[in-house]
Image (cartoon, rainbow, N blue to C red; front, top):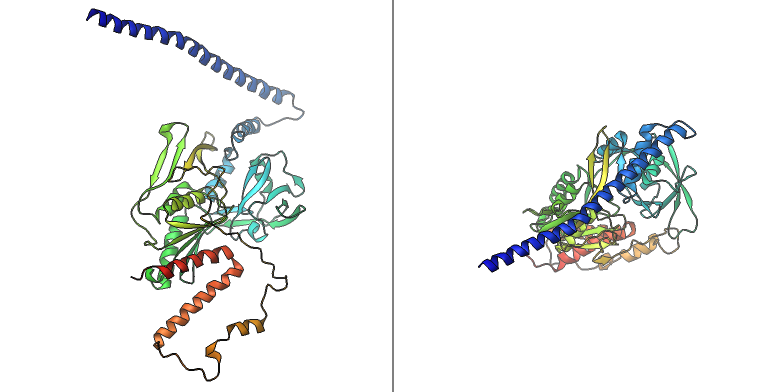
Length: 448
């Protein structure tokens, strides 16, 4: 017994001895690391004072500090930055859906300013700015070497003023200029309509208006269709939606899911991770869902697309999304400013991160570019008249005796909706494709 006890004590002492031998160098390393940090801070202080005392012109100390802070944050990734009081107020206003500007979401890619997406109905959208465009100059001044925030500042200006952007676009040989008149941007987060028997929900951004707008749109157009039994399904159009509020993306996803995970976030520490799950209640009442995405669908849009895709709740159509799979936390600071800091990555229900990869659609559908000036793209009136001739147009054709007058009227209404949806192919091929998928699913669905 004594031998066993001594052996145990010996082991404990040996362990203590080994621990002491390792801890000594570790403490020394930590002390060296802290000393190095203090030396760097001393270096910063020295440079700061020399600039104040010896720079060729007098500089504002506050501007210097803000620039240093912003430089530190922007060196981390394209989405971390410092927001002064005005920038913080502007961001708060944007989440409420109204602000001044051009109406484009931009990011920085290898030092160049890249358009993530133009927002629906804004000056940039109307001027023809496209997702994937690179902006190289503003009013003839180059953006090369500027930070993202500095470039954005150059694009800001009074409502009603003109700005000239120099744009580089893939497939276009030379840079070209685009004139835009700045305006107050009023975003309608959700626009709903009925195409054939499909309810189309165009979500252009994720702000405080998004989920209420989604609920209202579904309710209004389900009623207009004659009830949920008359609806073939729902199209959620997330193309060129740059994202927005995480909680709104979760609520929109939850609107079409009954159970299961929607998204999870994982930060630097395991305890910082969060998991968001769906609650009971499907606003679509089990009807098929098609999600439309493209290269301008980013962040919150990708959360919705990824969640519905992983749960096999939707068919995803279009082209690969942008691939912004990181979460930014807005941290208020002293002096009424704020820090936007990347604090986590988010993951779809299957555990995949879409950071830099994007969401790949189930069915890839490119948006063809139709040039109405090219011969052969438009049918003549005579051609259309010929195509529309049928048996019923022939003189003396006998009548159809298998349908009542009400059934005939219903058939004509259904045909009119189908023809209206077919015309959509010339305006928006991707959306028409999504509507066609819902029509096809409805055609093969078991009758109740």
